[in-house]
Image 1: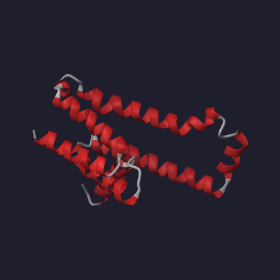
Image 2: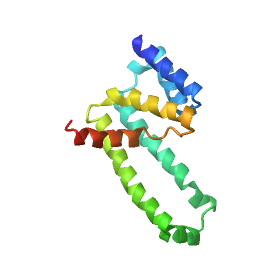
Image 3: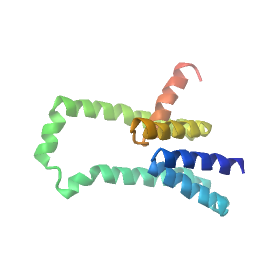
Length: 152
């Protein structure tokens, strides 16, 4: 019952903060829990398979301009060789590495207990700072680095 209450509070914060993707995810999980599907869906599916397919969908969204004609090879090459393109490349290396560390930290590292704090921070940022709540993996990666630096 307490978990349902926690999910409901997170759902209300997500709705109030207009973090629609977070609200949808929480709503689906809360519904599954209320109707008893949480006991029937394998944990491995929820924690790993959905993460994989979520990342596939995000990647499709990011790469869509390649097939829609919005980006031409000449534009891609020109932008990629500019200082901003090179900076984007370097930042992408770091954030992708951080996301990998964050995923490890939250799953195999056994720190899933920190996810509500990460989600809450994302939702509040979306509500108050006009952020987009796509950062829990990167946030948990930064948290992983901080935890390692302080010896955890």
